[in-house]
Amino acid sequence: MAVVKLAIFLCFALSFARSTSRKWIEKDVCIIGGGASGTYAAVRLQQMGVDVALIEKEAKLGGPVTTYTEPSTGQTYDYGVQVFSNLSVVHNFFSHFEIPLVRLPPPSGGNTTMVDFETGEVIEPSKLYMGNLTAAMLGYAEQEAKYSSIFEDWNLPNPVPEDLLMPFGDFLRKHSLEAFAYIAFIYDQGIANILAQPTLYVMKYQDQVQMRDLLTGSFVVNALQNNQLLYDRAAAEFGKKLYLSSYPTQVTRKHHHVEVEVSTPEGTKHIRARKLLVTVPPKTTSQFLDLDENESTMFRQFNNSYYWNAILKNTGIPIGTTLSNVNPAAPLNIPAMPAPYIFFAAPVPGLHATYYSSPHNMSDDEIAADILKTLARVREGAGFPDPDQSPEIVALHKWSPFEMTVSPDAIRNAFYNDLMALQGKKNTWWTGATWMNQATATLWRYTEDKVLPHLVPDEELLKVQY
Ligand SMILES: Cc1cc2nc3c(=O)[nH]c(=O)nc-3n(C[C@H](O)[C@H](O)[C@H](O)COP(=O)(O)OP(=O)(O)OC[C@H]3O[C@@H](n4cnc5c(N)ncnc54)[C@H](O)[C@@H]3O)c2cc1C
Ligand SMILES: *[C@@H]1O[C@H](CO)[C@@H](O)[C@H](O)[C@H]1NC(C)=O
Ligand SMILES: *[C@@H]1O[C@H](CO)[C@@H](O)[C@H](O)[C@H]1NC(C)=O
Ligand SMILES: *[C@@H]1O[C@H](CO)[C@@H](O)[C@H](O)[C@H]1NC(C)=O
Ligand SMILES: *[C@@H]1O[C@H](CO)[C@@H](O)[C@H](O)[C@H]1NC(C)=O
Ligand SMILES: *[C@@H]1O[C@H](CO)[C@@H](O)[C@H](O)[C@H]1NC(C)=O
Ligand SMILES: *[C@@H]1O[C@H](CO)[C@@H](O)[C@H](O)[C@H]1NC(C)=O
Image 1 (tube, rainbow, N blue to C red):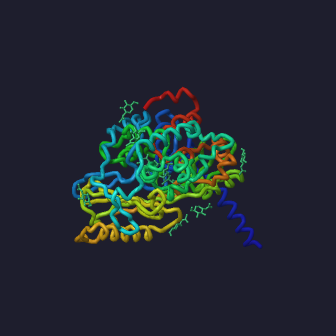
Image 2: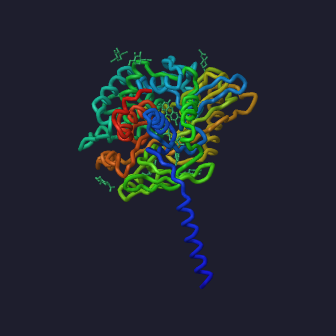
Image 3: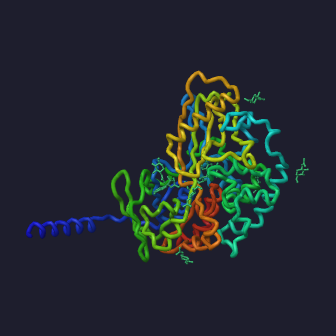
């Protein structure tokens, strides 16, 4: 009995000691996830004098920004996030970090050959679906424009237009826009079988801003081909406010503040913030966030695709030659996923970048094996000699969960209106690809215009410029 009492006493004493010694790090805003949206929000809030903490689980900021550095020459190449829309937020953000932007050069990738990656056969353009591409792009942009106000803040009308709910392949056929299919497949990568996705999700991705930049050739790219530099300079600006290689283990939302327990390389930290900004996919928050019934029921409905990018050496594909995957026998010539989209001739001689998507989970080993098998097939089909050294996957990254989707029925039943209604509940704000779209530029603009105004104590601060 005495032993039990002593044990109870010790437990009390210990927990008392723990709670009194707990040092709270007080913040205005705690941001979870230091990719495109989280880094942008943190930089801007800091500029406005708002005290932030930024928590990122990787050892670097930037999310899917992957910059390759050629060891022998130091030449860099962005094989992850590369192009940006020509929006003022993009110019402001880059110029703050003194990184020049240039117009995206005309289609690079050298000489592009269409190949059926399933058989390795080189496909003559005459065997492919032909149509008037310009007319199809203009036609798609015209359809998209009908719904543009929806995509500004996901305020879907009731009833949701049936065109947005039908599979994208059916939508293209209905409006005789079939010639747009291949461009959409190549531009809107990572969403697995694009023709089967509800049109809403293709329009979310391939939105008006993207269409404008595509039609007018006004995308911009980092002149240094080093997008990691942007995020590394942001990291340098934060100093101790940045928690890299860190993740929240428990977030408790109280009436007037949120309490965030963070695992960091220096041990557990406790942050108490007035407001929480979550930029990671909502469906992954069940691991740490005190979700209520309403939130969990909604987040559980998300399905998602999987996306990989990789950089390859000794492919046996001639330098400067890009191979693009096409299937002449498939509907609208769009290859079925899982598969690689392309072997892209990188500007660094001898390197090819590849991108891969799957509707279901696969391991990196399976992806690597399929990439190498596909390479062998296309080399044989195109009659390229085997390389002197074995092909090598220099780097492979998995981005999952990638595109977040819910069923057409859920969309019909006002899923997005309910989702958007979560903004600001329980001192919690949300941004990121699940909420707006995949494009970095649009995410920055959404964060700037629709989210930051709620995170600053005084609207006057919003006028603070870069
Ligand atoms: C290969 C590839 C190429 C792309 N190319 C382009 C392009 O050229 N142009 C373009 O505009 N967009 C591109 N994108 C789209 C890109 O996804 C978006 O631009 C953008 O990164 C999404 O921003 P986000 O803030 O929603 O998420 P992310 O940028 O993914 O940021 C989320 C961050 O949260 C971190 N994180 C996740 N979970 C936790 C946790 N529990 N705790 C702490 N941190 C966590 C992640 O590590 C990540 O850094 C590309 C994407 C990929 C994958
Ligand atoms: C383009 O690549 C194909 C396949 O590698 C090759 O047959 C063709 O000669 C190349 N064309 C040019 C202009 O380099
Ligand atoms: C393709 O469509 C565009 C835009 O509608 C039109 O101007 C052009 O003449 C068409 N080209 C052909 C070959 O029909
Ligand atoms: C970007 O937009 C501005 C106007 O907003 C324009 O002056 C500029 O030429 C555009 N840049 C590109 C690369 O199209
Ligand atoms: C969540 O709450 C909203 C109202 O804020 C309601 O319309 C919706 O049906 C709820 N969703 C679920 C799944 O409980
Ligand atoms: C998610 O999508 C995959 C691929 O389309 C499908 O097989 C699976 O049934 C979906 N899961 C849910 C929960 O909808
Ligand atoms: C996906 O598969 C990998 C490897 O097979 C596994 O480690 C991971 O947990 C899986 N992810 C999900 C979301 O199921």
